[in-house]
Image (cartoon, rainbow, N blue to C red; front, side, top):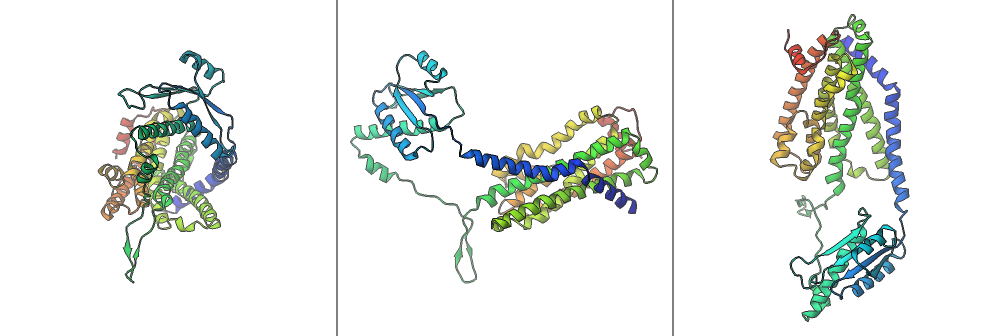
Amino acid sequence: MSKVWRVAKNEYLNLVRSKAFLVSVFLMPVFSGGAIAVQTLLGDRVDLRDRRVAVEDGTFRLLEGLARAAAERNAAEGGAKPRFVIEDATGDEASLAARVRNGELFAYVLIGPDVIEGAPGAEVTYHTQSPTYDELPRWLGVAINGEVRRIRFEESGIDGAVVDRLSRPVALRQYGLAEVTGTGEVKKEKLNEIRTFVTPMAAMFLLFMLVMMAAPMLLNTVLEEKIQRIAEILVSSVSPFELFLGKLLGTVFVSWTLFLVYVGGGLFVAGHYGALHVVPFGLLGWFLFFQLLALLIFGSIFSAIGAACSEMRDAQSMMTPAMLIVMLPMFVWFVVLRSPDSPFAVAVSLFPPATPFLMLMRLAIPPGPAAWEVALSMVLTIAFTLFCVWSAGKIFRIGILAQGQPPSFRRLAQWVFSR
């Protein structure tokens, strides 16, 4: 076992001293922080050019109200946002489209003649060559419907002010379940969206990032040593399985180092801004546990691929199935987040390759999964991890010295079950 730890220590020191590791440690937070800073600085830089809209009012009753609503909106914004300018459309639709193309108009709107009556098929259409700017069509939809509703009330002899008062919405606030304290006081806590939605997503994506920053390096390291015939020298001093296990543990230590750096920095920032109360400290233990299992699973897979291949081209072709397995949580995480206790969420979080990511996310969503689900996920994932390590060890033992043999999954299966 001492040889395993010696290999792990050497692998760890070589990785943490590499330029790639230093870049991942220091530049990734800089890039992330820089992106946030740039968006913050540029967030106030708004294009304040007028948004001029030509309205063809088929009802002949809505244009004046829209112009009045636009003037009120522009006055309320006080120049902080672009002005919406409403004008009467002249000419046919082809000429309106030409004016939009040459920049005279931002958009044009066609209002059907039977919109107020609500006839079947009556509609309002919005046309522009800048579809990504959605503030204007959203405002127009609200303003047009407001005018249509006002005219309908007037024609029905209903006071619009009375309708507004009667239809005023009631505020709905979300709280957790009420709890009775020892003194008999009923205590309820308002829903914390950061803890409910942001924390589960952040935990899963951080775990995915740490695994993908460490595990694929095993493939490159093993393949490079095999191509350069360094592995043949190493296995003369240690057994192939000891070499494989040492490299695997070294990768785990590298990923844990990244965890300490990133999480430690995050806790420091949270403490500086007085936000430590939103940090789920109880989740950190689960994070480290599932991080270990994920690294052992995918580290075993990537190292086995590296040992089985003799060229980078072969490794890249075999990486595709492995990456599909790794990316599985990324395909379904939103479904699990929306309904963490559904049969699908339970089933997919008990699928061992995806369990470390999805079960961690479910643990971060109050009230969390049932105890039997957590226990079963641990048993299944640990068993699958042991199988991956055992299988990868068998492949590594044979493949690390095999040269010139094109890899295939059939050959890998034969190596796994060979004596």
